[in-house]
Length: 312
Image 1 (cartoon, rainbow, N blue to C red):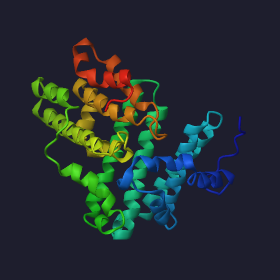
Image 2: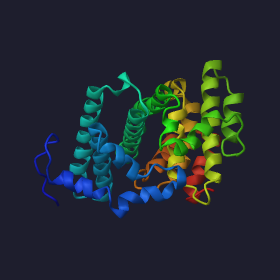
Image 3: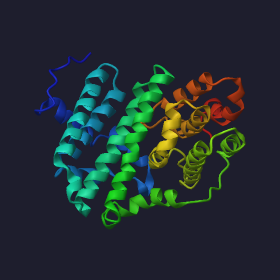
Image 4: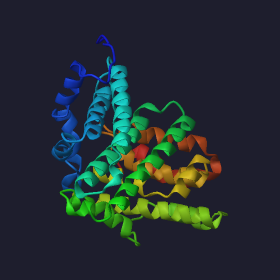
């Protein structure tokens, strides 16, 4: 087992060099192969991080998180670095106060940082918050609130982001947000559930929007050129759900949990990606176990994902 060195996140040490080198490793960069043309490559992150301390700290935090998933002997050490570097990144971000003057340049910095923080938080939960559904949901709903901040950044920046080198890569998620019609059948049971149940109109509206966005992501997966675990699409839905839906999840409403179990099918499809691992399986099994027999018929699609491995 590797000996832990004193953890000082405010000065450069050999572990920081290790984290930097890991950013160029085959294992770390394997995530780029899952996204096609709409994934933001590491070269873009590096371009802006070299001029932006808060983004650089977050990139190194992501590298540390990756290493924590790759080794049993030192995963505690690397996770400490991942958490500490992210906290430092957040402090640097708030100190820099980039929202004072929005430009195409700092909008890119803000978007890359916000999206990377959101993905990091979510994937940390998928890997390390699997002791109980209650603990998972507390962390996950907090993460969803952070994730929705990514859209707030995009709203603040308006059309500035589309004038940068990120523009072409952001079109797919923008199209998903604008679609009004879905074509797939993965969420058919969810529509039946929320339209037939005795549900308050405000809750029903939140459920319907969450289901529509989720079906759009499933539809996008079908067009992903034979790559059903396409990584950017997996992380689109958490940024699209409304705050009302997040509140319903916090309340552990059965309909909200069943919708989440269907989203977990996407996570389960991407289980071979180091960012995700077995989090989808945990979520499906935990939700199925937590809900009574009256709800099980609505969970057949997620259960089938577990039984059959990969549902396409």
